[in-house]
Image (tube, rainbow, N blue to C red; front, side):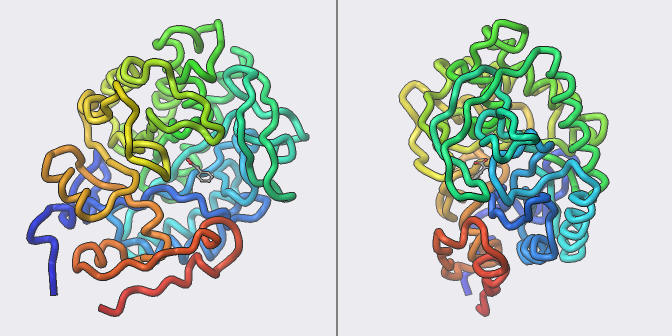
Length: 367
Ligand code: 8OZ
C-alpha cells in the first residue's frame, strides 16, 4: 500500500503555538447548519466532530458570539450556558478520540436579516452600507437587511461579547480559539474601505480600520494565552454580493499582519483566493508575500488537494493545510490522503441544514 508519509512531513506532528497537533492536516471551519434556533450544539455535533478527530486540528464551524452576531438560521452560538454545555459534549468526544478542536468566534456584522436579530432590529456594521446577497432564515433565503452603523461607544460592549465567547469556549473544553476576521463578516467589514466609511478611530486610515481586529485579539488573550489563539483572514475574498475587496490589499492586510506579530499568536490562517472558490489571486496581490510578514505558524486553506499540499509544504509556504469540503464525506481524510484511498464526494444538498443524513453517515474507508 502507498504511504505518502515517505515523501512529506504533512502526516507528522507539529505545534501551532501551544497546540500540539498529531499531523499537519487541519479540518477547516465548515458551516453545516445543524443547530436549532437556540444555537445549541447537539449529540449530532459531538458525533460529527469525533468522527473527524484524526485531523491534526479541527477548527469548529463559525460560531456566533452573541445574538447580534447571528446571520444565518441553524448556526451554533457560544453566548449561553446551554450552548457551552452542548459544545462540551463535542469537545469531550473529540478529546476521547485523541483529537484537538478550537472554536471559531464569529460575528456576521451587516450580513444578516432583521428576522435573525434580537427584537427584529437592524444588523450592525461599521457603516450603514447594505450588503448584496441573501442569507438563510427560518422562512428560507432572503435578501440581507440594511444595517445600521455601530456607535463608537458600542465598541467596548462588542469587544466584551468576544471576551465572553472566549471565556465560554474555555469552559466548553476547547483547545483554543480562532478569531474569524475573514470572509467580509464584521471584523473584515471594518478592515475594508469598501465597507468601512467611518470617521472615528475605527475608520479612515489603515491603522484605524485594522484597530478593531487588533483590539478583539488583545482582549481574548488573557483567557487563553497567545499560544492558543489563532486568526483567520481572507484578503482576496469578495463577499456574497461581490462587494469590492479593500482598495489596497497589500498595504491594509500587511499592516494588520505586522501588527499582529506583537502578540505571538498560535497561527495565521489564510483563505488563499476566494473562499470556497478560485485560488486565483487578483493582479498586484501576492498572498505568499503577505503571509511572509507573519512571524508565526501559517495554515493555508482553499481548494487544496494532496499534491498541492505536498508542493506548498515542500516549498516552505505552509506549516499546515486546512481542508474543508473533503472532510464532509471523508471523516478519515487524513488516512485517505496518507494511503491514497479514493475520496468520496458530498452532494451540495448535504452541506447545509437537515439532520444526520449527509452529516454523520459517511463511512470510514475500509482500505
Ligand atoms: C458558508 C455558509 C455560511 C457561512 C464563512 C461562516 O464563510 C461562513 C459561512 C460559510 O466564513
